Amino acid sequence: MENISTTYTNFILVGLVEMESFRFLYALMTFAVYSTSFVVSSMIVYVIWREESLHEPMYIFICGLVLNVMFGSSAYLPKLLIDLLSKNSTISLSGCLFQAFCMQSYAAAEVFTFTAIAYDRYLAVGHPLRYSALMTNLTCQRILLAIWVFVFVGLCGGFCLTARLTFCAVNINNVYCETMSLLRLSCSDITVNNIYGITWTLFITISPMLVIIYCYIRTIIICFKLPGEASQKAAQTLVTHVTALSIFLVGAMFIAFRYRLSSISLSATAHVIIAMSGMSTSITVNPLIYGIRTKALRIRIARNLQNIFGNSK
Image (cartoon, rainbow, N blue to C red; front, side, top):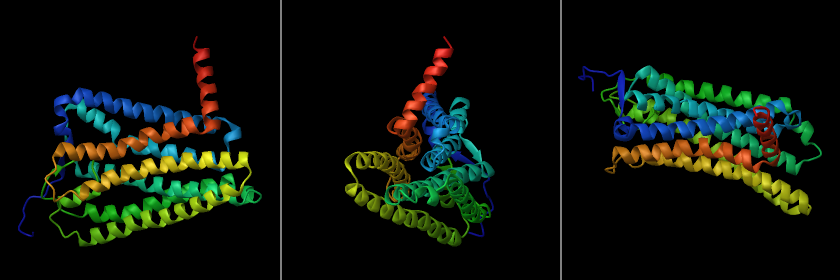
């Protein structure tokens, strides 16, 4: 390893090379995914911010969730669109690290926000008389802030470890950067990186999932004991959150599944499809789920759209 004289600071996103033949079609699809996600998410955030009746913990958490979706999609879709239109398939080390940091921040913050939502729903259903005292709007905002501070601090350590490495290969089998892809290109000792990465990954997956499973099981048990109408309303809200969480987890599994295929002769195109499917599904579908299935949001979004288009006539 010490005899290697060349270290690379620019990388080739092989996925972009693979997409070059139909780059205008892919650019159109990228624009459609990003614009749909951004417009729907923006509308949800605007409605929650504008309507005082929605200034409640559940809607504040939903707002935090869709703001995170906007952040995650903006971390790679605009660049992907520009790269496709300009036929650029390279990225610098600093740009790669920044993009990977943003995307992993999105994923980690999403997990913890879903955890906060699960706990919030458990309190609302299980402790309705004390709910307003246990989960205030200020408490909700502090939880969201704490999530982002924790995620930022936790990821900084891993990225500082990655930034110190030297890289002796340039091909990244994706259309965006990720830490695991960079580590595979390193000719340095990555033992510390692996230990840190595994510890962080296990912590942000196992701990939140245990809390989520406990909260939702307890909430479901309580729902069965509630009167008909109250039980139906609580169950409908629960289904919305579980559906959104499941879509996010399936997308994350798609991305993680790629690294289990390193020993299999998998084409670069297959790598791109798996990675793109994993990222694009949740950022597109989840805002739509909350906008359509959450009755209060659906009614107010429809009302605002009527006002917008009505005034434009």
